[in-house]
Image (cartoon, rainbow, N blue to C red):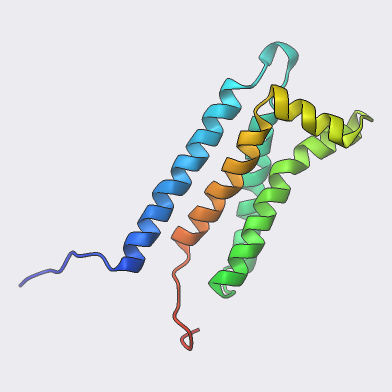
Length: 138
């Protein structure tokens, strides 16, 4: 009995998306950790990762049954909103201008890198998790 272990292009693409997503999240985690300032209790990147992950985990079950393309847009948007929300909440909580808070975090705490890498990582993971169904089959 002979087994065919060759990957289809779609399966290979999903694996590449999974590896790239994990790499992006790993890079975001590294930057968030290295750019935190414990002396000042500045953990912006870590909070951005946590909130983005919570948004991803909360949104995923709600859109799982949707078409892959539609659910991808919602998951990506939720990840972006979840990523930047802790900084906006922090600005409002401390009665400071939102743009000043975002710029400060961008410069001091690596928010620019985490703010791009985390949503990208979760979007790629969604592409890896959800199988593409050809037109007319779902």
